[in-house]
Length: 465
Image (tube, rainbow, N blue to C red; front, side):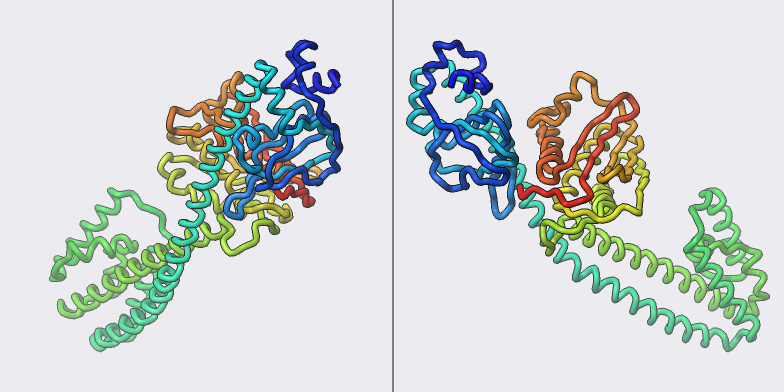
């Protein structure tokens, strides 16, 4: 018995005399997947792991959350015994396991007659309760945010879709009005002049869509020339008309090539028609882009949170990464961060918890943005290595100090200022990748190159935690 107990961290520093204070327990074995206890059941034992591993999982509002995995040399089960509550979580073996259990009465006897053990057990309990509280708060926040996001997505989707339909319908009606207006103006134009005017409008519209931002000085000079030309031809409010014409790429040569005006009244009519047509097209284009952007954001939120979908499904890693970048788009723009995607589009879909993976991408990319400060570049790479899909998120920031790197996946450890980080982001990412998806997550960092590498099995290897 003494040799068995010395394998447990709780007893390794105790003398033989102190070990003799530990009451006699019972040894038993569990097969992989076998349940040890269920959430809500009254506790009976304090458990010591001799070999194997036991995972502890709690369920909050139909969402499962892993609290910890206890492997050889570790102990658990003290929280419900000391708190006088039912089991706050369920426990099951994730590999063939050899356990040693002390009955509740023997556990209390041990604490009573062994002060050193009592001190250690109470210290571990305090830490575990703090971790449980913070993890629960984090999960509650995520659930609440998910519910809010889902509600907003549904509420925004209907008006956004209606606005896009209305924009398309409005474009058709505006074209009809423009045709009628041109027919009225065209009574004073020759057939050739009409065709030239329509060709000029078509070229101007194409230019407005495809042209990149021009030099502000060149744009201003073009506006001044058009303004002078309009005034010379007796056009009122020339300073209001000129910016639209200049933005559409029109200049004096193009305007005069029409062979117009015929008279001042006709010139005013076709210039006003042309400017109104171009301005209307520009406004409709902006409206279409804006409503399209709203629809894209709504879709990204729905896809990001996997609304109306089963938690476990076939997942396209690239869609998750792109949706995450869309969600973080404002912060990326605010920090002036450049994102470079290097995707292997031949990678297959994998069976995974999509929303949890997106939480991992969010934590890693958000951390990279913070590490870069203002400016900087983030590379996102995907590739296959043997039977694994790998995702790398790299930034060219100052890096993580070597002495800190071994601790970055520890709960509550953070290098951020007080109030700016809980120290749970990377720990949660580790749980999701390693425990839920049976994958791996690693960090390699030096100045100018910090790389988080996520490794996921291509074949299903999912834990129900």
